[in-house]
Length: 143
Image 1 (tube, one colour):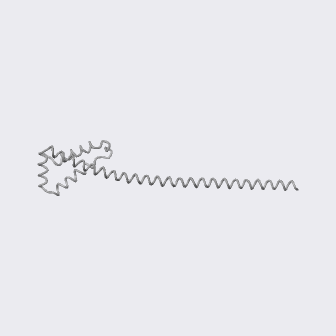
Image 2 (cartoon, helix red, strand yellow):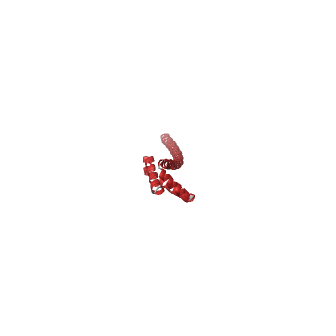
Image 3 (cartoon, one colour):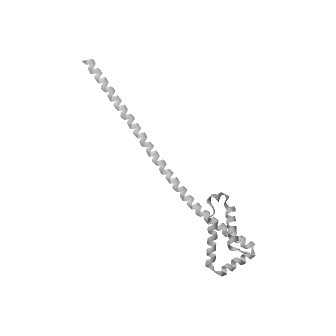
């Protein structure tokens, strides 16, 4: 009877130890999974913030590029008018014809300049200058 009782006690202890170990393991796994989840959430937040920042920056730079293009066009136009006296005459005639029409023409030319294909951006200024020159020659100064 004593031997059977001892065997029973040992078995119960083994079962208890096993149960304890299992709960410990489960706790560790659970906490590891939880920690991983938190890390993932943080990473996602950081990523989202980074993407937002990039988008804002890109929007700003796009505006700067457009402003630069318009400024560049104005500079090209000014240089062209300085170099070509006949062109200046044409522009003055157009000015006489009406301020509104001239503004519309300018807006159209600027749109042509700004509307240069984005894929051509790396070729940058030359293309914009070409576009501006083409626009000036075809639109403003028909001789």
